[in-house]
Image (cartoon, rainbow, N blue to C red; front, side, top):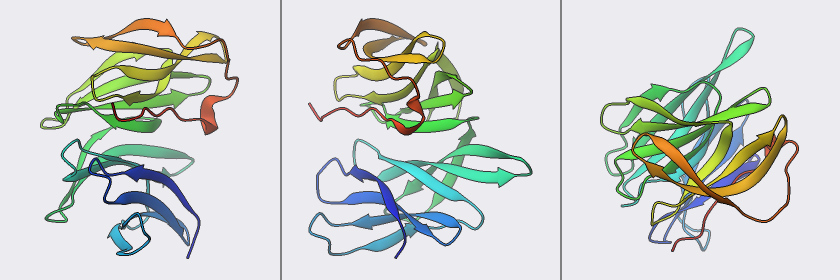
Length: 195
């Protein structure tokens, strides 16, 4: 047994997807909330699988495939069909750090980071088409009603929790939540309750 992290509840609440460190690799596992039926969902040679996110219907898991290439990492977004076990790589998104499904299940919102900045990218699940919807933003999560919670860069290296919504191909800022500021968002995530 290795380190375990990145837990994600299924929409029905009957399973938890999580990441386990096995040697030099990180794999995706599934377990029932009572700890039974723990099983390997996906392992890929020479790849860390991180940040699992359930599709709204609970049939698929999206995740980040992180691979070390030379002196840097590559980041691809993968999708695992839990019924068939089939896996496909959807798109390369440099510096991907978080994934959240849109309520209709047709797109993914991917948070990225690079240096002290970030961006939010919308990926079409069918085609893999990528659209940057916000710059200077990262660590996003989509609520059931389409509200987006994310970290908004208010000045260099300083971030504040914000909410907004998508208007076509751009993220519209609605408001900041509270006055707390985050100085290093690398180890912080954003999530939303089902509502």
